Image (cartoon, rainbow, N blue to C red; front, side, top):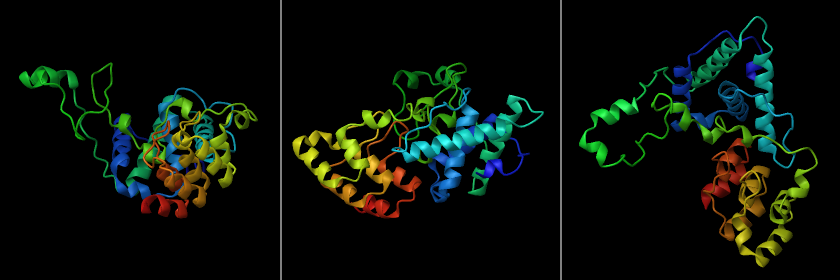
Length: 269
């Protein structure tokens, strides 16, 4: 991973980091980043925003995307937490600097958007405030409860896994996950198309059933790169827009895993 190849010297403020994360969340240029860089961004984001180290338990091999994200977080955390003669605040600033530099590399100008003081806005809005909050894409999505301010980071780049809650990457004890898989998810992971057909014939509602990570069968087929099962699931009405616990659709998982054939199928239907 790039962040561990040399000791980082660039630093960034929290405001720069938040602004870069907000920019990445809505810019098409970010989608063209390599899988390695996307995973590094995820690890950097987790390190900067989490006060806890990575969990000791690594996700199962049945979940390659979760496993890759976990490994990225471990790599970044190990690199920055073992730097000599630095405080935690300094290492987090360096991690923010690396994150910001990646954003600059794909076109972020470094402009920091001014935060909106929601409490002051409410005071000044007069009768408009009584009409309720405005709806639409331009609305404020999140705020700092302590200061009443909107933050770009709360809407950060989920499409490439740079924002996730701690539970999103925590794995079970090795060897336990296989027993806990539902029959439909186990059949998809095993690429057992006949078994998938049989299960769906018995219970069509299984088509969008979710596992412990919020994955539907289509999520797993896309992540594993199984074109025939992907087509079968779509034929049975699988929801292409379903999101897992990390707000990722099957298409996003296919993009992260560089499954070009799956990407073509999902975009073509």
